[in-house]
Length: 431
Image (cartoon, rainbow, N blue to C red; front, side):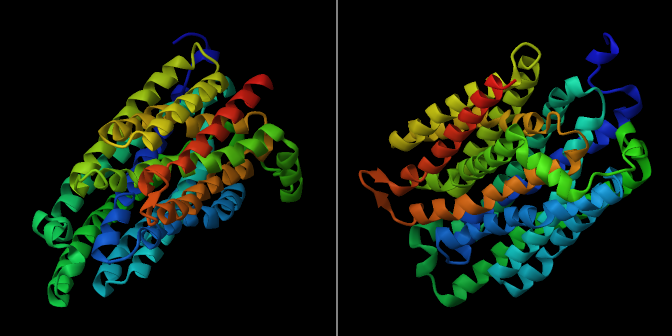
């Protein structure tokens, strides 16, 4: 195993590391079963792409609301208690899909997702710095990349369920209804289809809530070992002092801003791939298979990046992968046809290392301010709430100049990748 400095996870933390790492898959599932729901709600609830994207606004808005309270909770108590509270809120939000489907109100689904992501905010605010603390600081970014590699495994499961259980079962997207047009059906027929489809959307979330309850019990029983630095930090710095230090830390401050743009790019690329494929005449279930391919590339690239970081500086890799994202996004915008869709899928390979690397680089050297610093980096997930509605507005335009509006809408992820590349360069030159 080499000397102690080379050990990725110390033996005494191994069980905790494995169990906390499973949480990365658990919130990955929630993220990527939710992304395709934008297109599903758009059809079955007869709403615009802009309004349907409020699913993402609610989902990622929950992170913005709860990240700071989660950090304050962890400061006062512990990583373990933060995780348990996060799992409890996660389960409550999932079970709220039952009344949402019963009342058939789009706003109720948004509220359910909003509460569910209160739990995810607790989990991400807690689990990311928890993983960083489980061993030597020199291997912290590699350790986080390894844990984050299990996030797309959960995402793939969520995509598989969305494609093969949800989207494939929607009567509103059946060949007969697509030919007629859902909006052209009688009110009676639409009501029957809506009742069926909302139940199909509801069921995976209810099952997910049950799984989360089981994880709550397992974490409560088996996660006992807190990192050494948790037992030592009896004297937490004042919040005002922490905020001042974090604000004057340029690498951290710019990292938070960059994380906003990264999450926005990720959510836009994965949410609107269905609309992009639909513009090419591909149905939702088949379009979701392209999303699964994208996530598979994302997953494989995560493991490759974890290996590459042994030999190449992570900040340099971030800049290189940002440039790669720029190139594939340009293809997505300007190539109208199947090749453009392939470029969109390929973008995921370049996104793979971005979140954990930005996270790890930004938190380097923040010391006792890590908990609060981690909260702002999780709060940066609000980028996934802000930009998708803007992209939906562009898509609703139909065409933009000589391009289909759905192609032109990917100018927003393009801007995001430019910001990420610039941060990678600045971080590398300041190392």
